[in-house]
Image 1 (cartoon, one colour):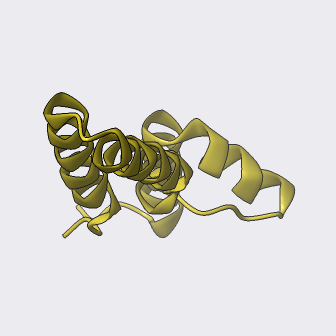
Image 2 (cartoon, helix red, strand yellow):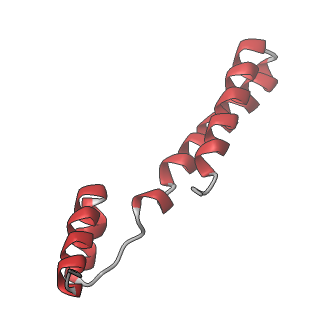
Image 3 (cartoon, rainbow, N blue to C red):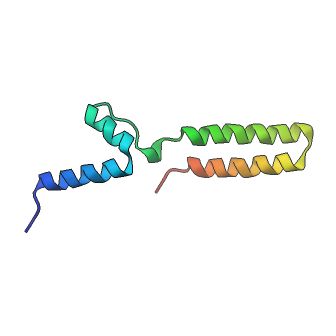
Length: 84
């Protein structure tokens, strides 16, 4: 027995509200917002901080800072990679 379209929509809405409550709330008031997987503000900030650490390590010629900056840049680049 096929379910009605309304039941499917209600189930989809409930699943969306559990996954990303800010996105679901924004959709309900009519002002959509990017879903969580496409918000990358934190990734850009971590990339900026890691780049600053890397540049600081190069300026003061400190290998530990350079290594930390390289690892941080790599992690931030991984965060910027779009989900598949």
